[in-house]
Length: 248
Length: 281
Image 1 (tube, chains in turn green, purple):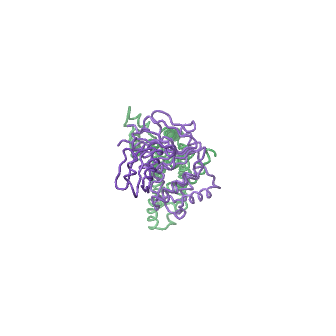
Image 2 (spheres, chains in turn brown, yellow; image 1 turned 90 degrees about the vertical axis):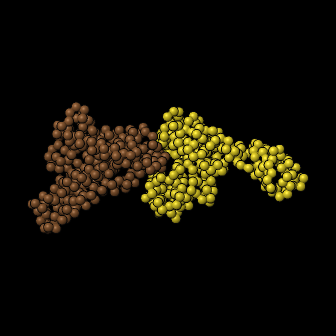
Image 3 (tube, chains in turn yellow, purple; image 1 turned 45 degrees about the horizontal axis):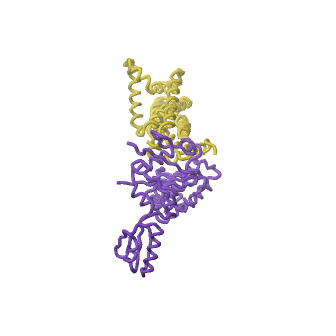
C-alpha cells in the first residue's frame, strides 16, 4: 500500500463534500440577481432585454455587483473551517488514524475545492450570457480563481491556527479592507501604512477583478502579489497542520 | 497542569495491554499521544522505532475512539466506504471489506440509515466496524464496550480474541475491570496522570497468591469460618483471606466435619484488588 493511494481514493469523497459549497455562489447569484433581472424582464420582454439598451445595461450592472458578492462570500464559505471543524468535532480521530498525512489531506481538499469553485462559477457568466447578454467568461473565472486562492488560503490559515477561526478571519478581513482603503487614499503613514501593506492584499484583488471584468490589462505585479501572498498563507497553514498537535 | 507525567510503558508484539483508571486519570491523553494526536512536552513515544505520527502515516492504526464523532449526516455504509478508502483498501475490494465488517458487527439492517438515526449501541458497533476494516499491527480501543448491550459486550470479547496475533499489539482503555481482566495480558492502572501499577492479569489468574475469598455453606457455616484465621461470618456467608492451597485445606476440613459448602468465589478480582489499592480518591 503506497502512501498516496488512500488519499487519491478519498478524493471523490472530498469532491462530493466540496461540491455543495462550490455551488453556493451560483445559488446566491440566482437568488440575488435572478429575481431583479426577472422583474426587469417583466416590465418589457426578454427579447428587449437581450437587445442593447437601458434594460440590458441595468441587468449587466446587477450581474457585476452580485457576481462580486457571490465571488467573495463563496470563497469565504468554501474554505472556512477546513481543518478546525474536523478538529473541534473530533472527525480527525477517524481520518488520521489511517495511513494519511493530515497536511496532504487538507492540501488535496484545498485544491479540489478551488477547482470545483472555479468550474461551478463558470455557470454564472455562461448562464447570464445565454439568457441576457454575452459577458466575458475568462476574466470572471480568473477573478474567481484568485478570490478562492486569497480568501481561501486566509481562511485555511486561521483554520489551521485556531479553533474558533471565523471571528479572527472576519476581523482580519475588515481591518485589511479599512486600512488598505485609507492607505490607497494616502491617509495613512508610518506603521499603519506598513501594516496595511503587510495584511492580505484584498484591495489589490478587488482592483484586479474590476480591471479584468472591464477587459483591461492588469499589471503583473498585483497578480503576483495576490498569488504570492496566497501561496505563502497556504504553505504556512500546511506547516502549522504538520507541526501542531491535531488534538487541541 | 500535567495530564500525564512520568509514564513509562512498553507493549510487546502479540500482547493485549489494558489501561484502567478513574475519570480524568489520563487514559485518553495517553491514547492521544500513542496515535500522535498530541505530542508530549517531554519524553518520547515510539511505535516500532518511529514517532507515532510517522508510524500512523506509514501503516495506520486500527482505532476505536471513545466517542463516535463522525458527521451525523453520513449514512452508515457510506461512512464505512469513506473510511475504507482512506484506510487504503482498493476500490475493487471496498464492497467486500464493507460487507465483512457490517456482518461482523451485525449492523446490516441499519446500513442505509444516517448516523443521527442510530442508537448509541449501533453507533459503537459502527465504530468497531471501521476499526476492523484493515489488518493493522497496532490496535487501540478506547472504551470499546461503551453503550453496548450484554450480548454485544460478549461478542466484542470474541472479536478481540480473534484479533490476537503474535505480531499484533492491542491496547484497550476501559472503565470495566471485568472486561480488562478477561481480555488483557497486563493492565496498567493509571491515576493522577501516573502509572500506579501494572498488573499481570494472566499470572494473577493462574497462581495461588493470597487473596480474599467468599464462601457459602448450606450447613455448618460456623465450621467453615473456624478453619480460617480472621474469617468473618454473616448468615451463611464466610469471607477469608488465604492462598488457594490453604483455601482447599480449610474447605476439605470443614466438609469432613459435616459442613455443606455451596459456593466459593473470589470476593473481588485480583485486578479489582490492585485497582482499589492503587487508586486513591
